[in-house]
Length: 58
Image (cartoon, rainbow, N blue to C red):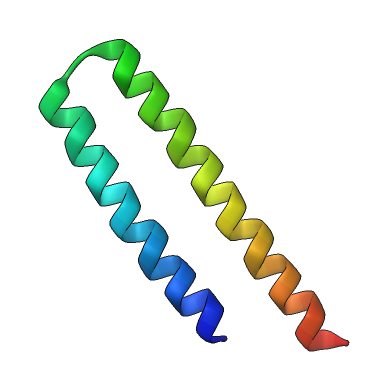
């Protein structure tokens, strides 16, 4: 459970940081890169949570 909480907090702070960076830079190619990196980060968090849930069920 601790890894889920820290993962959500970490990804949340990361998304806020890169979102603010994308907004301050304001160029479309960088914004597209930020969206892709954010999607990969969220997918990684999803996979970690799913694996943690599976390990707890066993």
